[in-house]
Amino acid sequence: MNKQLIYPFFLVLIVFSSCSSVYMPNVPNTPMLSQKGEFSGGGHITPRGNFSLNGAYAVSNHLGVLFSGAYMNKERTRKDYRNKSVEIGGGYFDTFGPDNNRIIEIYVGYGGGSTDRNFREYDDNNVLTSNIAEEFTYTKTFLQVNYSSKKNSNFRLFGNNYPLNYGTALRISHLKMDTFLSNNIGQPKEDNMFIEPIFFTRMRLSDAVQLQYTTSGNFGLKSRKFMNAGNSIFTVGAVVNLGGKKKQAK
Image (cartoon, rainbow, N blue to C red):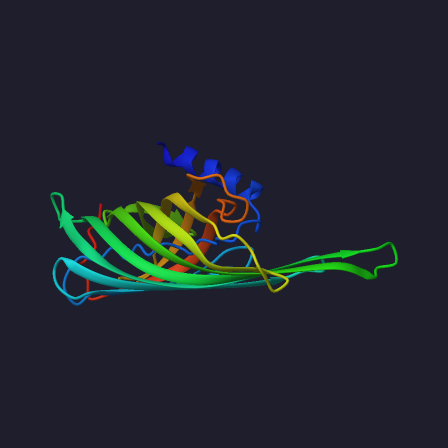
């Protein structure tokens, strides 16, 4: 799909998404590891205040480990939404292509999280008449395939050249509620399988530091009331890679 068509498509998904789902996706870890000893770390934030922190390390020339965490706390008069999650994983990576500047990564992982929501209603005199407090905890397993390239295209801004590179990922996640309380009363628990296609663009500021723009979709395979696919990703952030192979100029 043409990149000029991809981003507007996902922006439409983002506009029509809301914090209605228990599941708030974090920014998937796409470290672009290339050789043993390389470290990748990044921080990303959405316009709605969901902050994600990622890290990865290459323990060999083809084996990498990764971790991620995310946090969001959004308070409003009629609705509060708080979410936090962590995940760990590991898998295989390899470089290929004429200059070994294309990268394939395959990771599996496990994690968990919690979501708290409050829904309030007021009468005409602004007196609280109803408050529903929901608490969820859940566990998560995932399979993720990343494809990216360190081959650069140049972006010229204010007389300076900034190399750009692109990548995509596909994550399949299974989430299962461990607890579900509504006003401290136990409720039936749900699960769901999510497919999350991810696209990212990185602008290199130095050999180690890149700015990253990420968009994604979120599609649930089961019809659920709470554990549904109500949230997508649109973030900006920064990524640091130390100890990897040198980037190739176009």
